[in-house]
Image 1 (cartoon, rainbow, N blue to C red):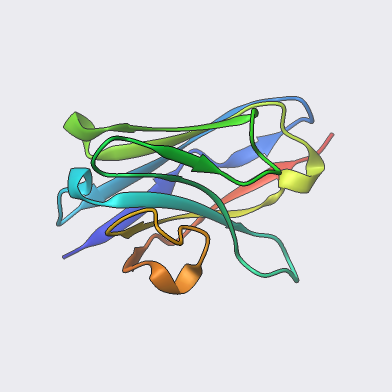
Image 2 (cartoon, rainbow, N blue to C red; image 1 turned 180 degrees about the vertical axis):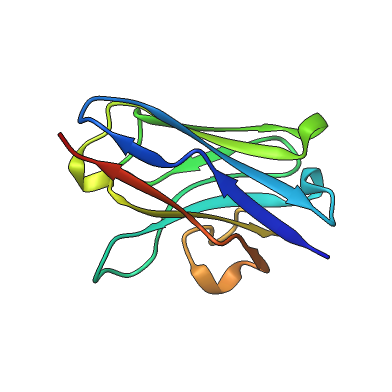
Length: 124
């Protein structure tokens, strides 16, 4: 059974950091591009970052560029999202998703598999 499971969310103060994990089961994550999305209450799901399967090329939304870092550990079948300098505007449910490449990485409809999401709350 193909499955993506996110973890690492939680409550953090402004300026703090969190590292999210996206673990795959039922398929080899190495052969897929992995995207991270987030959805805040009342807002549409938006693309945050993507890492390609082949060269490990990375892409970021302008709102997180320089603060977030996406990386993959193929030996662990896991992709990470390191989030630094968090602000209340980063509060959302974060999802990882898999597709063939990072082409059109910000579009939800391009992805084949999705995780269930993990809540990130940035608040003092």
